[in-house]
Image (cartoon, rainbow, N blue to C red; front, side, top):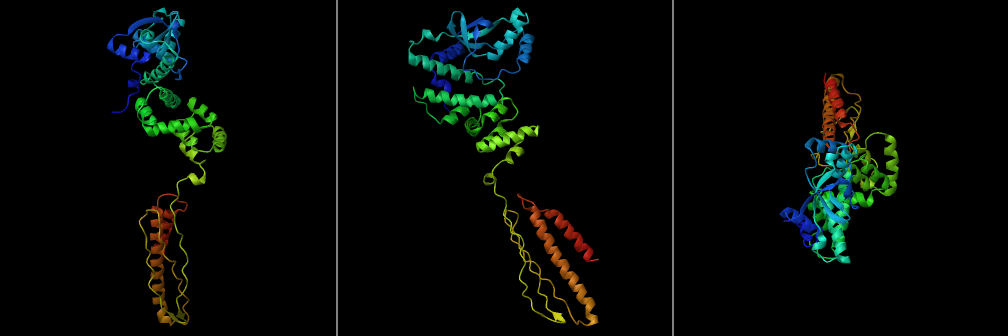
Length: 363
């Protein structure tokens, strides 16, 4: 079983509030929404408030309590429920007083721990962690997800100053956010390497995680040029757009091919007659990335002083020989067409054209 961040917080104020709520020992209280103070650590986007207000009104009020800690003077700091608070405030401003009171779970941690500087700092860390872990079910933007991972990492590093936390940080973050360590790595790359302009695009939902991650892998100066060019494009940015900006050395290597080389003409002949060797057979390797080319066919030498009765037979032989060479060439083109990756030559079209030439030659 993976390490649970919540288990770290036993004995710390805010976590006790959570456990007491689970045990029915925390206090459920209906609090005026104007007395609820948003947490300064809240980073989640406050989107779709109108829709949430409509749902609250339709269901007759907020059904899921928020989580708060008392601040004194009748005020409470929200750890969970920021969107519910805004939606309720919106309804109240519309004159719908029935939605002024919002249900909240309240726990006064000061009763259980001596107040000192270290305790206060740990309490603040725990509250910030709870702000993230208690918002697991809310709808999040891609920007929210990056911020979650970034802030949770910083909080764990702070907490490690006070107590031992077993396990790899990236795995702990992944477990708490319900994702994979690899995805957390992408979030880290975006946070550390993506330029501010492109982070703004992600925050405004002009690009998604996949595009942002690919951009973060580019050098900063390339990101700047890419941002200017992609902005002028005026259409949604795709992964294909980004990959065009990758330096050549970062692209996947293309399949190596060896183009056919002409063979040396070593055939000897005498005027009036010549001996034609059998055409060299092409050796190919299935399209796994490397092609072994066949030598180019030797051009038949001219036949001089051939007897008239042999001319017809020689022409037939020449046609068959040429057809055989063309067939071999067609096979080569078809093999090249089957090779995946880095194709710049229309081998399939070449193969089709050679096939037409063979058919015409044999008529």
